[in-house]
Length: 343
Image (cartoon, rainbow, N blue to C red):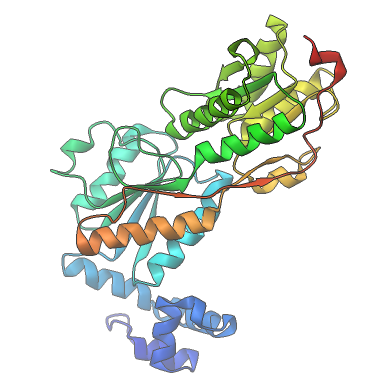
């Protein structure tokens, strides 16, 4: 096979020593093909360059079978699991995925959107929670788009994620059941809609239990480890301490735990700490973190299915799909320490 001759599905089947139908299934419905067979097909695709040529043909025809995924931080522990769900659903319908890593740079985000105007991508999955400033100048109208993991603050586009308010309520209910009433919320935000919803769940849970406003300690944060550590320092400077820290995500919770341990406190004997997300590291923290588990792969699958529906029909069946979160109880929560209970 010469370099100038486009690879065909027959070439892939011949090298993999399987039927053409099996190659098609391995590409479009990989879950229906044995792992060993998928491996042979993928190796044959890599050897022949079949996938690359197929994408090139789609571009020459003026349309793309690629979906652009724009993410601010591909190192986020949540990203890889969601990407698995996105890719599997896309592949099963003959689409591929392009990843645009903005590194939290607004200009990079705008540059990636130019892919949509040049027919290099058919639709958009947006992790950033906000449409880049100036996106209106890139395209006359926004192409089929779905927000994922973080609701889009300024977009009004369909969204798929976890029910943040329900997850927060589950954490509050656990802490209340353990006897906590002075519960700090770490990670309040005016622009991160997911964080605002978690704060709403916190308030709703405490309202339901009749906990007065003076026992609620709310600290702003951006979801980073450092924001959690800094929140601990602010509370100690004010000498206004909770018995439990309810953190907006697991990274914040890790920062809180580091801040408390640096001051010589034990978790959960002195303070209880909870997170949200259940990133892989949550199991290995000391103590293991009680948190809310997001069904990340399922979120990715639903988001891609919704985008493909938009590409086919032009209208979403739903503007928002919220999946149920699970409370994962580990070792970072116990009853309030008597030394803080009456403070």
